[in-house]
Figure (cartoon, rainbow, N blue to C red):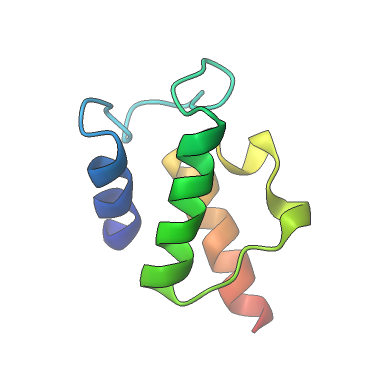
Length: 76
């Protein structure tokens, strides 16, 4: 989770990702941010996020994103 938080904080340092629970729903992360985030996660964490997993509920909070990463790691 620490690695993910570092990626998120580098993307948007002004956001408190530990507290924010509606990143997509509140427009905190926009589409370009999500694309950038996915690329960084894939590069730094060595996983590939399938297109069908790129849905708002998987990116609304740091916990949601982490859960998605763990799920993908488990499928490898």
